[in-house]
Length: 82
Image (cartoon, rainbow, N blue to C red):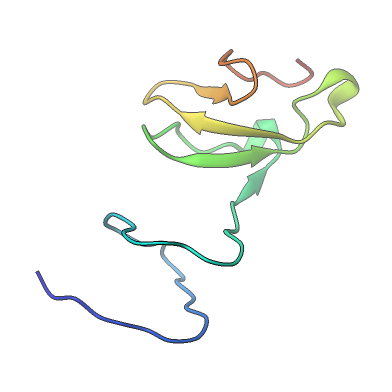
């Protein structure tokens, strides 16, 4: 498999495929969705759910297990307003 080295910011319009290796410096941007707009919960994916808290005003980091989006703080499947 080919390897490419970049300097400076890198933008992908279709996402990246493969493992991240080495140290990551700076920030990592995670896509955010309202609960109703969540894509399928692909195992290993992470997203921010913007209306997953009490009163639907809390943003929660979630990870996909292949079936559900699970809250990283509790491990419970995310639902709107939980």
